[in-house]
Image 1 (cartoon, chains in turn blue, cyan):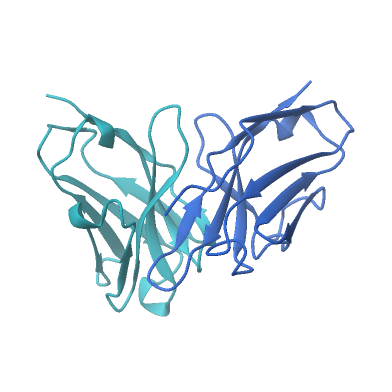
Image 2 (cartoon, rainbow over the protein chains, first blue to last red):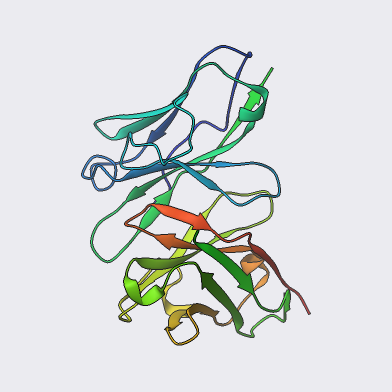
Length: 111
Length: 117
């Protein structure tokens, strides 16, 4: 199980849109529509913001959206707000007998 | 509202066994879902440790499989993690979470476990 690849950091100004990529392989992201994304503020537990590639849990802002193409999944945050500054992690199912392989995480800075 | 709460020792000696429990409220473990453990070393990313179905079926991260045991106590509505032969590399915040096929939600608040003599 190799970790999924995410950029270490991204940044954007309030109101702008940013996209965080998550690259895997044909054995994980490429094979299953079971990609989830988590937001983690410092000292807090991660929070699910996207599941099954592009579904939002109840209560999560529609400014967060997910997509997938081939072996790469993406998280887009539109209308950036200061409160979006956090670490973001992707996770993909890797097949029967396992659960999740996480990405290395991306630190989002709102300028 | 489903809530999870980790508990256990915050300090474990090298070569010993780390033992943590996750108490679940607002949902009966026996009703379904997998229940998992995830850890995060200080300043680093998340690592899935393993997950267990209420029936006892378990899935473990291949890199930890030889040292990990996850078990469930449906009478107490809680599940547990044991990690043997720990080293300093096992120092981390340990989270428990409900696992719906790689969808972890909700999460416990996490517990910091330090491995040190």
